[in-house]
Length: 489
Image 1 (tube, rainbow, N blue to C red):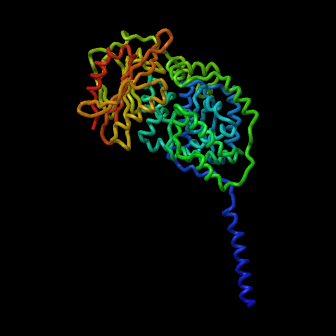
Image 2: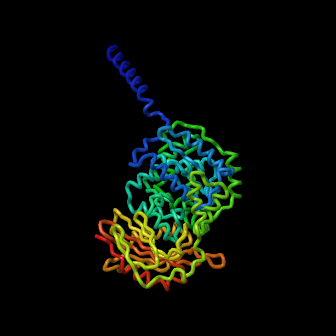
Image 3: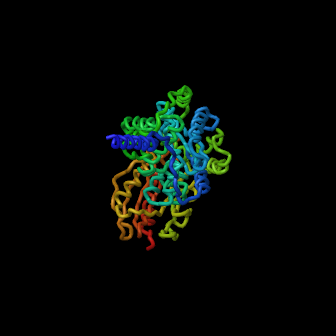
């Protein structure tokens, strides 16, 4: 009887040893930031691209100077979050505040992050603001922009049609031109995939946790926005919901060691009061001001523009406006000439000019083009879509992104089928604000958007632009140009 007893005691002892060895594997463990992987773009190139895009922001949006107490608070909070990232994975993060009422924030490759005043006003406590900032930092950390550039799919490009996308040509033309012609344009106001958003939530939760903030507050902020009703805040539009954020973050943190999280901050409440006193603008006011070069000048005068971007932004501030150009100055010649691009050719009035950039062509009278706007003309952009075929959906996606970027824009009719030299395309007329002013107010602008499919997933977008009062006079010229369009096989 004693021998089996000894065996049982030995078995129990062995089990105790095994359990003690395996215990750390199931006990709470401090979360670690993941390896961000390799997006196929060097760190140096991402930083250069981000700085170029940042210069465009200062030309297109009002930004508080770094000396402002609200910005200084956001930068201190940002520095606390940056400390949680291992040096080998970190970026030269910088934080700035945009004078916009809408709730939004966005990150650029290489580290620049912009937070709207409206986001600070909407946050209930410092942890929620830290959550938004950590989420944006995670897009940089995981190099989501660079990975989307590598994929180079049309939905990603369309998502970049933003109110801060390079030059604002008329109501919509500049956004399309910048997207097609410059990689910078596609970075600004980029709409990430649901997978990217879920990943940014997860990585942002780790940053928050390490900095002493409850990660659940990030989900709480999204819940607050979801309950607002009416038109969703821009932050929700630019950041598609990957699912139940609260449940996902709860699953993420359930095995993390318990922690005494940072409670309410008196400095946050002080800054929130200061933020409420900041002059902030609507999206439409910002878009209209950009056409007139208002923000470039304001940002330079206030000292908001970093020295590295001053020369680029100054060019925008000193450029000629097109607010007073008349139809007599842009009247098209009846004589046409032709231009050939990589995948298309088109005829245009002999007295109009062309401005080419990668994947994009602007055709307009010289007097109608300024640094920040085009009042009359045509912009043609070539793009490629891996999901080519559903023209109606592609057109709808394009229109929705244009409307998101231009709050005052509205369709004038329905999407229709158009025939372009035997090819079935799609067309839609839209109304927005022209850079041309009358009695200090912008004239209504008529924008005609046409989508023409090509071969192997390639497509050409044309946007015909003119003030509503002159569109009818230009319509025969626009139609003749459209009929001359040839897409190369």
